[in-house]
Every structure is written in C-alpha cells, then in structure tokens.
Image 1 (tube, rainbow, N blue to C red):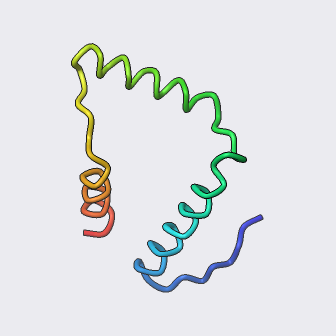
Image 2: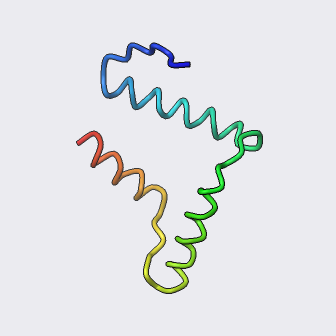
Amino acid sequence: MKPDLALDSVEDNRCAMEALSDSLSRDSDTVASPAWHGDILAERRAALERGEALPLDLDDVKRRMRERTWA
C-alpha cells in the first residue's frame, strides 16, 4: 500500500517522518527487526571494541542529519 500524502513542503515531510518514527517506536515490541540489523550492530560493536569507531551522541547524529538533509 502506498498512501497519497500530498505533502507540499520539506517541513511537512519532516513532520510526517517524525510521526511515523514515533508510531513505530511505540510499537517496537510487536515489530521484529530483520536479521541484518543484528549483523550491522555486531559489526559496529566490534569496531568500537577495536578502537576503529567512536560512539556518537544521538543529538549530534540528529543535528548532522538535519544539516545534510535540510540545509
């Protein structure tokens, strides 16, 4: 199913994405993650343990994403 959202602006799209994300977060116990998510998390944890990556603060990640996407 592909809903026709008819969003007219970047701000409308951003708000819709945030609403979808919030909805999925509330239902996270009933939505199974695909197996490849676990694989990616294991790879990232191993990179952290090897000192090849640094953890990022969620607020910094969100800010970086906004700057790249809506700048």
